[in-house]
Length: 157
Image (cartoon, rainbow, N blue to C red; front, side, top):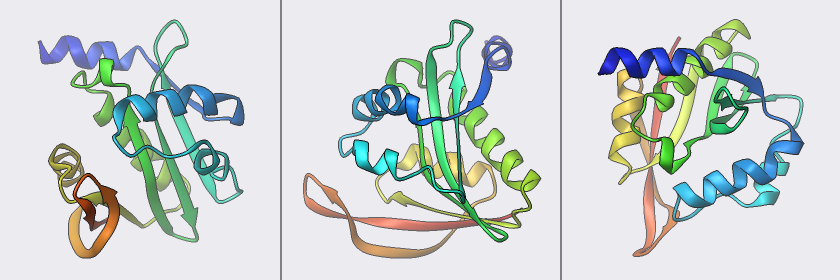
């Protein structure tokens, strides 16, 4: 079963995210997250230091995306998201692999991110790619309980 999933992922393609994609990625973000990014947050992610990609199926539909920024050799992952209907099919791994490869290609030597401390599936994904916890931001995220901590993670490329 795993082999079929990987082959299916391999048939998809990555393209740079554009401002024209904001409405589509906003819909994915809203469906996948209780506290999604806003349209303005997506719109602000097209400065020169940012690079962002979408993962497309064979019909050109967006399955997932990531938003990243590279400043000198430091790479930061701001958002990575897979459409809820497509989760569990290996697309999160495909996005992470692409993100890390693209970062290396652009000269990154270290990667940073923050993740909700309750988002165990994301934490496990990041750990599989060599990320380790480096700190905690108390009460960083809004949550149903009021506030939630952000776990800071880092990986050396």
